[in-house]
Length: 113
Length: 114
Image (cartoon, rainbow over all chains, first blue to last red; front, side, top):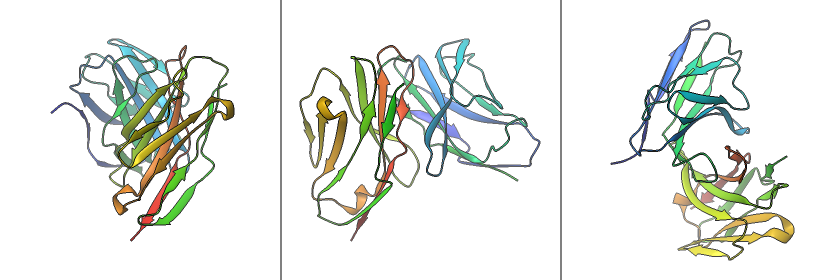
């Protein structure tokens, strides 16, 4: 079945450690996105990528990094520079970036203590 | 600047009642797209509908219907004969044609009580 997978579902880390969240899609979509969701805040865009080896910052990119070496994969690294990393992280993909609906993965809940 | 407002933070209704979720948007573009997503307790957002700015026809899909009114910049979502499985957070979203991004509202948490 086509879809987006994110692993793990729950992730726990100590403060000061970098952590990488996985996102894989087999929908053959060109565009991929990372969002952060906090209670009552809706979804905020961290990074997005329109094509392999290219990506752009979203609204809250500070403290995060991404790579897009393969069309299917768009991992997100939460660095120690991110001041408040505990959140629910959602990955999405779409056919192209403009105007098309995005399809979401199940999310990763990151807790940093 | 584009903006999406979902003024209803949380709504509770009894099963079988009809419920309308409000969405008001702001954009300076004449070409734009509107979306609704459902986020059940599992966390994954589920795409429900996409509507472009040139198509003001209302849409019905089973118990779901959408009312798009450009005159009031609104794109409201109605669930008829609600069911407990409709309990979720619902997000309205906007994408301007020139933009690569979708802007989401803050969501409305809907509780359907048995």
